[in-house]
Length: 481
Image 1 (tube, one colour):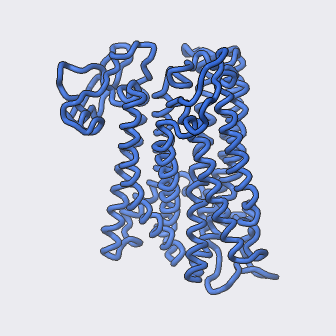
Image 2 (image 1 turned 180 degrees about the vertical axis):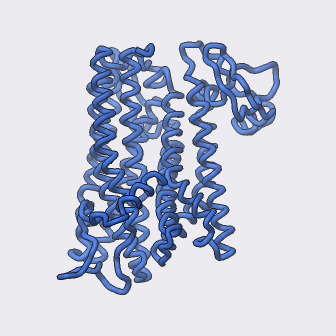
Image 3 (image 1 turned 90 degrees about the horizontal axis):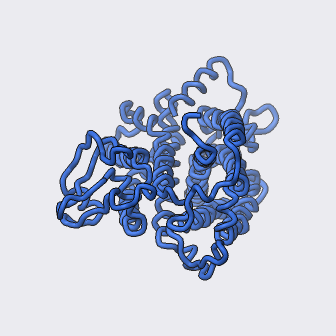
């Protein structure tokens, strides 16, 4: 069917499930730190705006966290069901790393999450703030171990192979493998940026609809400061990451650049756009800038970048895909930097909250961080092919012995269940965003008591049933963000 085999369906299934999953941890990482900052600012200034925002975003965080946990369990099971040969080959490394993630990060998050979500009026302010910080630290520790495992698959070291299995010999070398520091920083920073644009987009939506108050303005202001400062830093991290990839995975860089061959001693040009053709072994319709490829990738004007034809055809990644996924990521990155700079210009002109063209841009930039994360992961994972553990085990040798029919049925089931379950969850999150902060300023607790309206602490009770006209608003926001 469509020329696909069971292995192709196994890869598609893993790509589909992990693409859903990565969206939730990214927002969880960013929102956890955002909540810690909000509560810290409230404790320091006693400005009720920060407290109101904390209560508002903590409910969205709780829903997002739950969906991340559920989708993450599926990933762990797939290693045993669809990729059992990989688990047998490298399980002595990847198994402990994932176990460390559970024993440190997940237990830390789970231990303090209840206090963070439901302990606002039940524990002291210091203990509650400590709980929020611990949850934020837990999300970063989780990122540490997950990226250590994945980075080892990209640049493996600290092991020996005995009887066809990887045996760890140096755990420090395994964890701190050559690509790990760059990939950890790149992913953590991407999560912060994605969350910033999600928060900023939410604020822009409310401002465009005429809801202008200190809480909404603070949301937009903090998001745009994050974009202004962190987006350029991410570009620098990406440059260092690229240099590291060129050293350890040159075929991936060649595929990303759509660079097929070097000519004499000529410097490598940068192909801005084109269509890499794997069969014809050339990039069609290439728009090139001379010397720029060498300048960006080697920081010189005379060194050449390895070309795809220098590698056997069976060892080449699919340049057609990674060429464009990389450009989607980079293009969105430049647009994020532009958005941050525009926000600074408007801030100086005292029109950040009233410029409708900018607010529309901020609204449409809401999913940009998540799209960039997906594009980045497609680039790094497809660019690693045909290896599942780079240079050691091919993807074709890692899959379980399932039939095409079995993989077809499970893939269809995943698609149906994921769109139904997580589609409902994402829709509920958008409903929470649409309602906005509901707390009153100048009080220690949210509005409540007999006969008084309040927003409950329970995340699934936080959004009231929409009244007349609110269904239309909810649908519109879901489409726009």
